Image 1: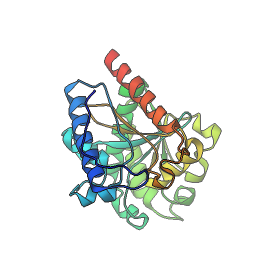
Image 2 (image 1 turned 90 degrees about the vertical axis):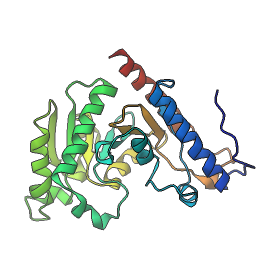
Image 3 (image 1 turned 60 degrees about the horizontal axis):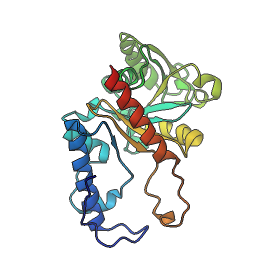
Length: 259
């Protein structure tokens, strides 16, 4: 076992600069181990971004840092949220909601969709993935009556994604695509912004949701929750999401090793 020292005194629920340095050192080391093949996968825990930024961390999050260290462009990776009955991928992530329409392009949707298709094949063994693409506007725009993003951006992207060996449907009305019967018809939902993907996943699988980065040369998972400093050290935290992240990393690494 490799140990990272130097985090100083630890008080549960109180992040420190020393702890941030220790977290970053551990992340750097873990990425190196996974890239070298010394480790079969990487499971990251939640971190205090405020403390990381205070020590000069310039990436939006751990995902972007890991992608850079693996030599992969940001647009070529995708954040997938996964639980027992639902997988979702947001096309845009940590940007204000008002900026989403301008950020969406045909090329971006296609890039995230292709990363999702390849990830489902490589890491989950789904040879012909079924992808449901969400609309942006209520009722998926109602043929332009409630917005033209579906007509101008989403549908052209879907048509291009249908060139892949996959089953692509949509754009679906976001308020109707996550009920139980609908979820049985697809392997993953390609959503257009952060909360569109995370709200249904966390509603259904809050204690067992996994955040997985697709498009990397290594397996990387994380529990789909934050630091929860308010309950740290009180015996209230639920271990389900971390356990699920460990199990998913192991199963995906084993599947890749067998191909």
